[in-house]
Length: 228
Length: 228
Image (cartoon, rainbow over all chains, first blue to last red; front, side):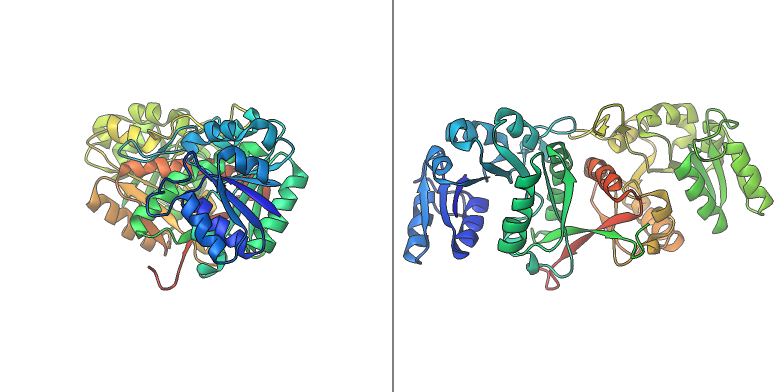
């Protein structure tokens, strides 16, 4: 399958590599494919390295990736996701599954906060702005290395998913998360408004990351064995 | 020890009973000690029942409870906590450990929200309003029956705690949570600003409650065994 990734930083590169290894054709994308992404190489260097390793991997503009993908992943910085997806082109995102992995994090204050929260969320904003896209919020509550390798952690742990389109959600859950990425435990939180819950967990995630000095953790919802 | 509980609803009654059973003297409190609390009896009926069972349990005004307690628990509805604590009397709360168990939940919309969040929190507001109190945020992320009986759930699961006063936090953690209530896994999130993280988890908690149709769950933070 052709997967278009809007974004080219850590999440895009790690998720893109894993999906390419599984046989998918991947295009990551950037405003500037020549620009380094912090500790990660530019989109173009990433794609060149991947091609040398024999994978079908490409780099392009946001619009290139949106046109290329049968399924689209939003792996941009949440503060700029709407703008990036607008650049990608509403017409190329329509009628496609659009998986929103981004978080609207704001690190400009002394304590992390969200640029949208509580009575709205990034996932909802994307669905409203692109009403013909089938927006599914998933994978935003874990680090990229956990996204592509949930068995890195010891014991059961859960992924959350939400979205308005039941068929799209089923596909993302079963094909992408379970079959491709190996997620065993997935909790369907309902419609896209549950993006609020998935995103409002992030400040706790960031605090735990600071405490552990590691992004290699996730939460498991523990219940009674004789569920009441 | 004499424990004053501001509030008299489910959390106050369940937590008060458990602490009374452990030998503490408890006063719960209400604007109107004769008023039923939903499925739970009035503060006065609760105290009468408890006395018949041989416990040192009382009902009074918010101010009575604040004067009575060597340690104070805020078990009010988070939307009205500041007002209730003001009625309790700042002078009676000063220099005492004040454990904030409340959540600023707003159920007036179609989806649960918080009356304060993201760049502030109830825990911080209480600490600012009562600067001489030693405010510790804890127990707000679990149902009352889990608070007093963490072993009700199968497997490890975590409680979060935060506050500015290290000595007060140590006492709450070791004496109240570990020794009295039996909590094994407690994660110290740092200063009182982490109340934001503990409270912003609540919308996810409420959604999980709706899905499970049960409040008997909690989260466990799962890590690698060889922690990096």
